[in-house]
Image (cartoon, rainbow, N blue to C red; front, side, top):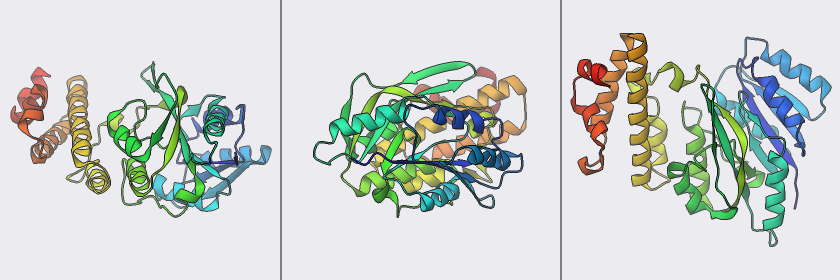
Length: 314
């Protein structure tokens, strides 16, 4: 089996985190054949930092573009990739030193008849000092259908690009949707796994560290682009590729979580601008086609109780 890996990392103003990601890769038991860094128009010195790493490490290549978003940056990186396997990582996270070695080893072991198309591993989340591992206890071979469902229903898999190795020839012509601001990785994989009957090895270890920072959309509670809920455009498209009932349930869970987060932030800050989003989110909840029998008591309360009362009781 060809074991070469191209690691693609888009970055935008990540000067405080980029070194940790790069150092974690370079300390690995198995190094990728190339690390492709794509600067998305940074203004904080990240680009210079990336170039300093490239000067010291021949496998690192740096490209740049005007600020267009992570989807455009990943697509640009993919256009330069030369390896058999593709790994998409995020610049504000980091990996275990045995991530690539375990993934390649698992695929080699399972691929006796050249039937393995990729790999998935477990991961950690890091939020407010709390580290939580998500991984299955045993290895297995997952079909496209199983992955497509698990991305919405199984916390040990979910729709993260960063815990995968993709076969280059299967994704080289699949572009990221640059009009989508959130869940573009989920949309990308929904398109991929609905188009091919693929087989992925699951590696039963948490090997990726997903760092939830306070500057993220869930941290600063900015959930609307004008009057549009930021997750809605991607989920409307995803419905074309995955089971609509599963997609709707996942969308509902995001709505519930965002409302909980808004109410929690309002309780702490009393920021009246959050009240506008609470009202908008209530309206979005009411627009969903989820049957009443499938709604939790909390969800029903979110929808029917006036905002001023919600903020007092939750």
